[in-house]
Image 1 (tube, rainbow over the protein chains, first blue to last red):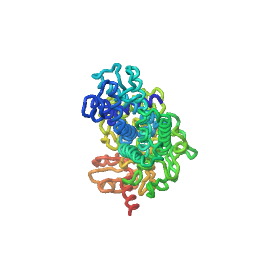
Image 2 (tube, rainbow over the protein chains, first blue to last red; image 1 turned 135 degrees about the vertical axis):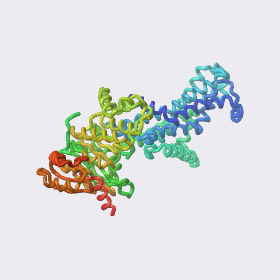
Image 3 (tube, each protein chain N blue to C red; image 1 turned 60 degrees about the vertical axis):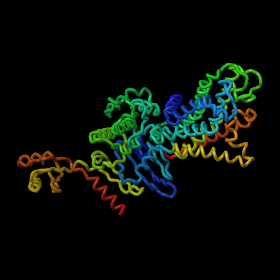
Image 4 (cartoon, rainbow over the protein chains, first blue to last red; image 1 turned 180 degrees about the vertical axis):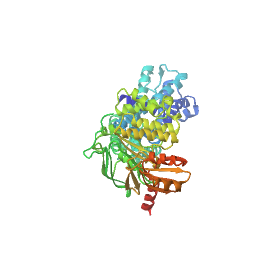
Amino acid sequence: MLRVLVWEFGKLVRLRSVQIGLLAAFLLPFLWAFAPGLRAQYRIELVSGWQVPAFALFTGMDFLFPFLTAMAAAEVLGSEVSMGTLKSVLLRPSPRSRLLGAKLVVVLTYPFLLLGVSLLGSLLAGLPFGLGSFLGGTGLGPGSFAGTGEPLTPGAALSEVLRAHALAGVVLWPLSALALLYAVIFLSTTAAALAAVSTLLLMRLLVAFPALQPFLLTSYLDLYVRSEAVSLGLPLLFIYTLGFSALALLIFERKDV
Amino acid sequence: MGAPAASSSGAALEAIQLSKRYGRKPVLEGITFAVQPGEVYALAGPNGSGKTTLIRLLTGLAFPTSGVVRMLGQDIYNGGYAVRRVLGAVVEAPAAFYPHLSGRQNLEMVAFLTGMSRPEARIREVLAKLELLAVADQPVRTYSLGQRQRLGLASAILHEPQVLILDEPTSGLDPQGIGRVHEILAELAWKGVAVLLSTHHLREVSVYADRVGILGGGRLLEEVRLGARGETYRLRVDDPARAAAFLKTVPGVRNVSLRDVNVVFEGSPNLALAALVRENFQVRFLEPDYFDLYEYYRERVKRASG
């Protein structure tokens, strides 16, 4: 399985959508750090480089990161279909579940890769503002950008930033699994990515039904800044991820390719 | 290669009442046939006749609406993935590979997925057999169509399968490549491998195929057995009419007739040639007169569609 996983990661980083996505995730923080007009829109002046990751995360998680995640997850299977290599692999005496299982691990890892690159870009973009102790908040912990009134040490700031990025990665899991499920159903990158993004947009519209709101994926896209919602949101995100993954594995087992 | 096993019926590959529908549209209906170990079975049929769908069903890539496929007696749909250990297949033309990997790396991946231990020597052997050693370490994206097709066959025979299923294995190959592929397939069949291939090159395939299944409209219209090959000969001489009349008098030569400018006969080609040379006929060529499968196929498909 390890060798299959290594292959799958090798294939992942060669995907065009992944390369473009990682580049965008890396460059986005620089936009925030060096575009005063955009900061004015949020009425925030950066006082520390530790605040750049929050800006990148807020804007990225609004649409860009979910979109890039769905694209990559769809292309992980869709590219094999379009290249014809899926058939070659499935002809071998290896269970279909092993192949899709490896792809699932890869697509669930991708959000962390994307967010990791975004964090790296954020910290580099934040260097001119300094990464030492500062009076204020990272935007991702208590007191948001204003902070608690106490100076924030680099260690505490890093911890807040890492926690938020890790939570954001988990928030993107169900979308990865959903895009892979659609890729199994449609065997097409475009159709799967479109279906996943459409589902996300439709779910956003379902806030019109307050009874449904606590159970919608879209209610937890900002979970990384709402610590009070973690106890309900996190198990729900896991259930969605497991459900979509199990369904993908089940359908793929008897799917005509 | 292990000794070929077979099912209780002796067949290496059996399709039993295989049907496939997409929605309400039938693509294949009631296909039943068997391929014995050491037999070459060619599938022929016009475009849209269901050849590719049938090959996908036979290889387990697609699932039938009804019917069963058995490989060495095991149901390929419910027998688990291990059944595919005996299968070698190329289901696309040109064969698909990871373009950033070299031919050798692609084969290493196939060897791993097939569960081969220490495949290096065997990989080298098949690359040499398919005349790909010179490009073995180049990325597949730099390969020509013919090289990719040959790499496809290399990947299919890498683990020495007992059942080989190939969709248009000579598509995109030059005449030399086509000849090489046919040689390899005939050799594998001689060693006991059951070979099933779909093809439009009926004349070439009829040289070594044992049976041809003609598909039309999703049904197996007919199976043609090519058992009597090589017993009839044809020759071309400077004066065919006189040569034919003369050959009728030669002992050991039978059923002499004229077909266009060729003289066709049964019996000993050596006796016929010696007698003609003795009588100062200028013999341009003499060769086995194979059953013209292509003409037969055209006629059969025309009849079915009419």
